[in-house]
Image (cartoon, rainbow, N blue to C red; front, side, top):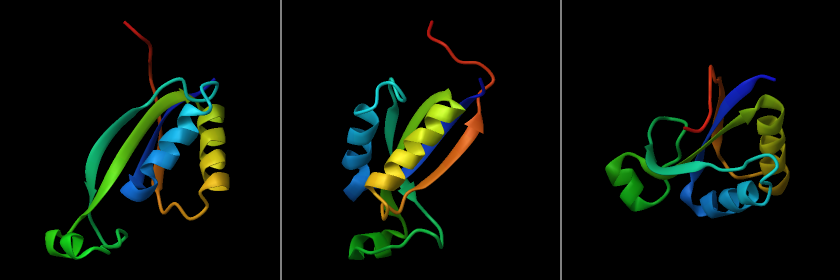
Length: 100
């Protein structure tokens, strides 16, 4: 099976909901990493006055890796439960993965 890395860039107001969805499906997502990041660019709406002044919006980056089928199921789960989450995602091929 093809292994991929799923990266989600999530607005902070929905990050906990997405994390809960990932945690609710250990069969698809046995674990993930999260990092606080800043969203920049024309595709990132700057809503709060502090965001407009800073020129970026706070986001949470979530990453998990596994079988492509499982990662696509996770995306479908998020889309079903949070259809207006305003998150950005990408999938990347993984050459190798494991635990040492």
